[in-house]
Image 1: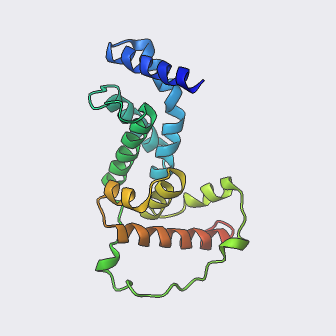
Image 2: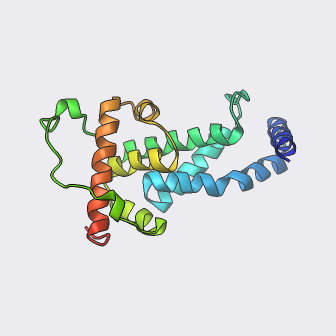
Image 3: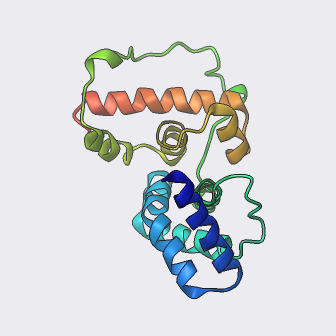
Length: 184
């Protein structure tokens, strides 16, 4: 079954490279919803996510850089994530480098009791929308998109310590908001 799906996808890519409009439509239908959701989790704005989706497909449909070293979906997701990050940068997302702050050795002021916090995924996603852009982006890339700290650091052009710090702070802030019932 998977072999057939892979051959079909490769056939779609070949059709797109030949300029087949129906091939483009089929690829778009197959990936647009997942890519929109990926972008929305990062940019936290439906209009921006729609713009990112459009820009990503325009870039992807050129197929200049697609070399079959990964799946089309993984390649497209990387484009979506990068364009989402670019969108946040245009909106001035701020990531604070831990090495440049006096908080480097500060202890956490809010103890987390993660084991006792059991909420529905939808409640967590709704609460995540309240996080600052930097926190939400790092948390989304790690938890929902599966990137490790090193990959996130490369994507955001920051140090790994910054990513770890942002991730830790984002998790703490999310837990605080969830404990308060999701309100700021």
